[in-house]
Length: 247
Image 1 (cartoon, rainbow, N blue to C red):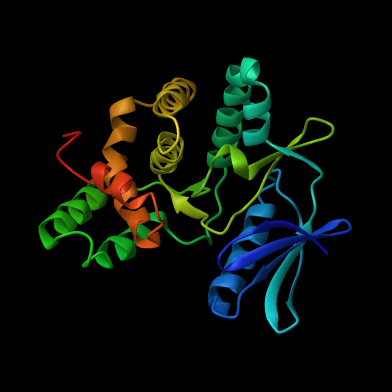
Image 2: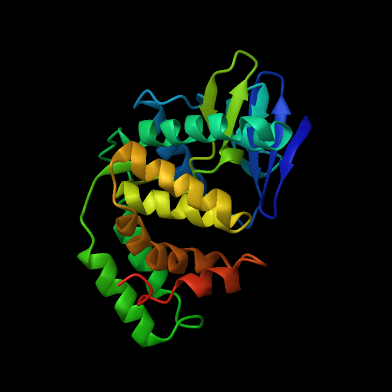
């Protein structure tokens, strides 16, 4: 099998017409089964995602097998064709709006997941800040739209016929679309603040959403991402956790 992507706890291989995501022995079995279940639920909404084929054990390690999509990621296309950036960004936001137009009642709730993550940050954020974040989160409107959780150009594959396929549904929940937009904004801002602002302007225009409303989510979303302790991201995310910034 050909290696497509290798990360700390998972490796994705190509095996003919299949993409096989193999997890390390340390990866919780419950998380793997939950990811497969969530992907199958999202697939049933009719969104353009690779079809789930099986969950199995490969050489003693759990694996999820899905349809392999031949093509390039939107991130690669943006880098290769900077003159088409606006066109690609427009397509990107349209796809995100399509995702958020769906409902999937059996998915985990975004607010519950964020509350758990904020509560676990005792070693990174003081109790007063955690309290303020919980309070703000509880005050945000409760919605039940499909939220990808990691919606960025590297998770969109454009096939050889120009059709888009959305991948990596391991973080999907149901909740408030503005929270998902805030997560995407932070992912862009990690690398390019100008592009992040351009994205947010376009998202708010297409969805008729006040920019301030998305900004209200930024400290909450930033805090919930701190649990990953990704090198190079921690200081950046902490800079967004100040809950007074957008009051």
